[in-house]
Amino acid sequence: MDNLVGSRSRRAWRHVDWTLRIALISVFLYHGIPKWLDLPATAQALKLPLFITVLVAMAEVGGALLLVFGGLGHSRLFDWATRFAGFSFMAVMTGAIVLVHWGQWASAPTPQHPAGGIEFPLILWLIGLFFLLRGNGGE
Image (tube, rainbow, N blue to C red; front, side, top):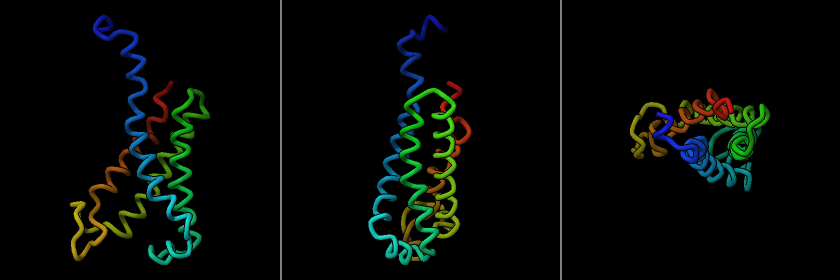
C-alpha cells in the first residue's frame, strides 16, 4: 500500500482537514462578526441576555480564529486550540438547536420554524465534535 501512495500524497493528505476548517471558519465568522457590530440589537433579536450574546459572539469569532491558529502547527498548544474551537462550536450549536431549530429536521424554513430545522446546525455540531475529538490528529 505504501508504494501506491507516494510521500507527496501522504503529506497532502495530512492537510485535508483544512477543507472542514475552512467550512467552519467561514460559517462562524459570517455569523459571529455581525453580532459584535451591535450586541444589544443582537441580544434582543436572539431573545438572549446581553452577557450570553457576548459569549456566543466570542465562541463564534474566537473559535474560528482558534481553528485557524490550531491548524498552523503541530505542538500540544495548536492541538488544544483546535480541540477548544471544536468545543466552542458545539456549545453554540447546541444552544441554537435547542432554542431555535428543535422540532424540525429539514433545513428549509417553515411557518413554525422560520429559521429552519436542525439539519444544518447538527452538521456543524458534528464537525465541531470531529475537531474536539481529533484535535490535529496526533501530529
